[in-house]
Image (tube, rainbow, N blue to C red; front, side, top):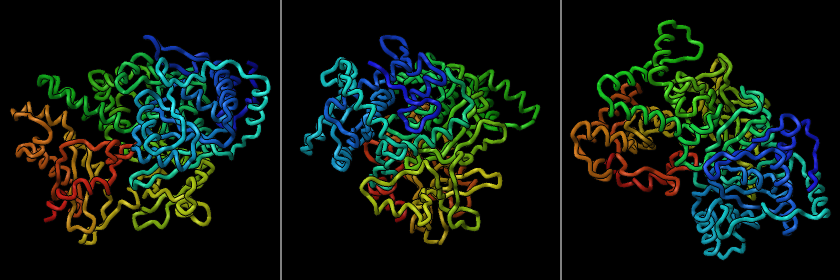
Length: 599
């Protein structure tokens, strides 16, 4: 099949990126997947060829420009990338859906978008979505990408298209402008109201070009992609990797995470705080399994690492850091392949102490901030000296205007942004779209924050989550939730107190850490649903709360708490897909326990 070569000096649409890479820095291992015991590379030429063949297949099957296609990926893969580029070239609008979506969400999205096809990642997701569609009597075919299984989407091996179809494809590609809709991503956040975020090629290209100027990466370097491909953070990051000319390796699945890092030896990755927190928890848990000497060496190294500050000139601390890295902290970098130098973290708040520890270990961590509605980047810390402040989400990305609306005496107010990365609006919901834009075009993020003297952005909370107690004191729950999660005993936390006389909390214990502690203390371990009521366990958590309360103002201190016997999950709806607690649902689920704390 003859490949149509588009102008490659620049890219203005997402599907231009493969041609852009081939012209600037052609990569024989542009995308890589693990197959039959080894990593198999796919060249940029193959990607371009296969995506055009697949785009022709869509045209042959009668799909027209503007039709919606539902994607249900788990993590990314070369197949998803090729399929993505193919849909874009044929003018089809991709509608990614999270694999954890409930049946009513699946039906709502498919019905509202009037999608013509649903493509799931594997046989299990195929069954789930196919059953939801059947139950709702929707007339949409559901197929899946997993090779060798019934229902496999076989368009990849479709024979070459006719000349007429190829010319038709090229006409469609030429007709697509940067302002055309590229995808609709549904987000409900902690409100529970699903909204289809309409993103254009220009929206996402703006974010990519801004990031290209900020990351210290070189063409040909390796990156590992392991975050969900249904999220805009990883989708945009993966497009950016290709524009960089990097070699993208897609993790197989959650269970192979450690192997994938060790075998790929990436130089960079994007991550979410939970991944770093889990690695930190693992290191802390090891202290209980070693003898006195090893345990104290690990604790000393962690303490030294938490003192690390980029650019800090302290000869004694520098020597201590060298030993801490050699003895303990360097093991983190080895577990991640040994070559990783940089990591960008987003989607939720990262504890500054953990960022310091990873940076002390030789992995520079830069926290960023964004939303689906902004494609997603708004601000990010930099890797240059003096441009990374732990505890902040960095400086606005190039081309983005940012302001704090109606700031209080401490400079805190709602964060407003304006730029070409901001969404077109919410699909078929003009009223909601109107609510989130000011009359002069600023997008209301719903997040509360402030800008420091050095122009770094600090996120304080969600505007709708800030509440006032009956004593008249305002409480920013996000800040407190992150504060109490400093304890290794606490996995998750929800701060409560709206129209109440004092602050309380729902707490999910770190059950692995708790079990180790119980065994060390000679406390008989049974099951979480019983252990949360154990008097000694309750007393240990009270000690943790008391210690952390000492660092807070009196009106912010947690006076009582509930230990939840099971983790909150995305599947139950208690967490968003970015692992933020859904307040209204958790309050419903634990209403009796909450009432008991205030009785």
